Length: 169
Image 1 (tube, rainbow, N blue to C red):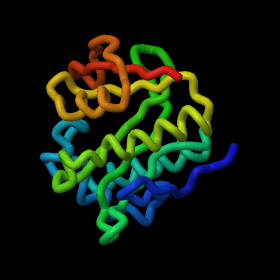
Image 2: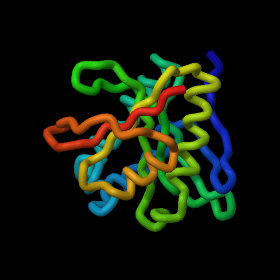
Image 3: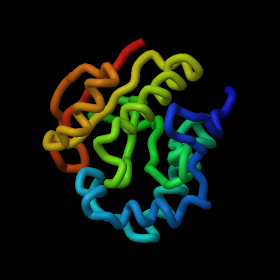
């Protein structure tokens, strides 16, 4: 399987997540506004573990998270990608995304998602991808719907109510 280390979208450059991104991710993980829907702020050690887990995911599955930067000024925008996860006992592949607050509401999560879904379906040949978010995260729900995901059900994930959306080839 060919690893997708870098790619671009209309406005963004993506590169595979690495330890060199620790400081940027730590800053994002310390932002209470950003992390409010992602399980809360994370310590430096929790961010290191997050990166380590995602590097292991890349090694095991051949895909994972990418870090995104604005093409014009090379600013860190956020992270997004595909990862294996368990949803109510079922193995799934999840589209995940998180952007720093100053880049919210600019269509960037949708732009990132479109390219990642193309990679997932066309290159990785995944038959379906799920996406889930807190029931209160309406912005993320709008992104999922713009990407073509269909609402499936409500679940409890990380001890909180979430909505599951699914997209099939």
